[in-house]
Length: 107
Length: 107
DNA sequence: CCTTTATATGAATAATTGTTCATATATTCA
DNA sequence: TGAATATATGAACAATTATTCATATAAAGG
Image (cartoon, rainbow over all chains, first blue to last red; front, side, top):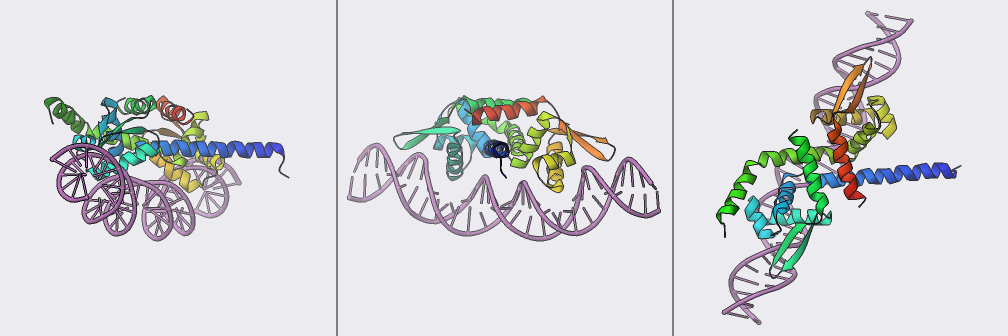
């Protein structure tokens, strides 16, 4: 009894559900004070882990854990430079999303 | 290697801790599938609780709980119409923030 | 009033998550 | 190679949170 249209509609809903979940997952990453601080710090300039840690006064371990979250979700990228790892924003979208939120806050 | 500029920037960030927390709290609200669905539904048109519940196939209680979160954080508003409560987006920022996230997703 | 319908809310539970501590891995340099 | 430095990671713990179930409140109509 599953005609083509029903299947299409189901697919559409499924696709949308995945989209919503992806959207929620993205915002979840921004929904933590430490991660927002790291991202905002990186909007100013790229930094290595130690610098971020010192700059934001957060333990190295916590920074490292959160950087992994940020990298996994594609918001930051890293490059090795000798013993240190330099992190930077993955793309301009990150800046845009932060700005979007800021505008709502300071309204 | 903490020169004056670093210290200044650090102070600025520390003073803005409240801002970052506010920003994180805002994104936290978007960081849940149910709430994103509700918000997206409301971008189409205002709806009462029962309609949202049926439309998204979520229990009335869950919808009501999340609507409270959304209202407390200023993302939706409500008006009573007889026995029903009609919810709508509080302002255009909500739409903008969702669009911002969408753009990142579908890149 | 009493019943029905719509919505809100409180308590309990399960699941997720951020930090810390200890330790592992990786790179440089003596 | 061995020591020192930088970063990553795993386990454990505490805290937050989303849902469910039961029930309370609120409005409308008889």
